[in-house]
Image 1 (spheres, rainbow, N blue to C red):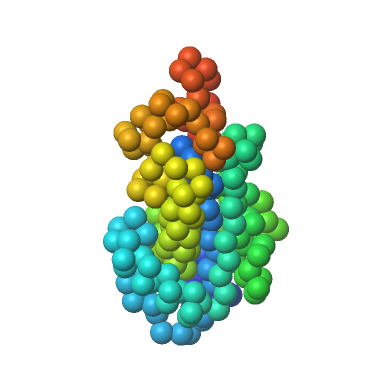
Image 2 (cartoon, helix red, strand yellow):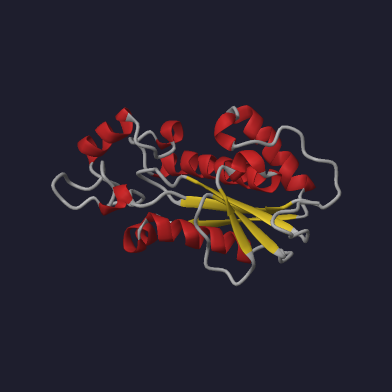
Length: 205
């Protein structure tokens, strides 16, 4: 069983996807793996895996984990409270939605989240801690599918291809069409030039 700083109780891994995007929600996942179960082979930071491998692992995680859940923060909230706080809220929502309350929450990065549970932050935890790797994969695969659906609702921006990140084609579409309802209006690349870009300089998670 996982042991970090003396903790050996049931732990939840937490990670997010989409924090640096110009459009769409930030998605967080929380995963509690079954203690003493055979490890899921191939877990890693979702960014290091192919899309096909992420989908394969996501199916295994959903089937084999003790429990898992997702939490979102949408652009209006992101613009209102900033991306750092919105990400922390999305992570908290994921943790609080778990069917089994963990004794310890392990969070990728260096920011704690607003839940009244013991928690630890783990830099590069998505490559080091299996439960965080699993959360990274679930958050990424869920968000990618969501952005493909939003592409059909808001055509012309290419969301299915770039998932809302600041690709050249996406930025050009924003200049041509203007932002749509799922764009983050306070982000550089979306907000008109010359206005404050405070969202671009927040500390990382």
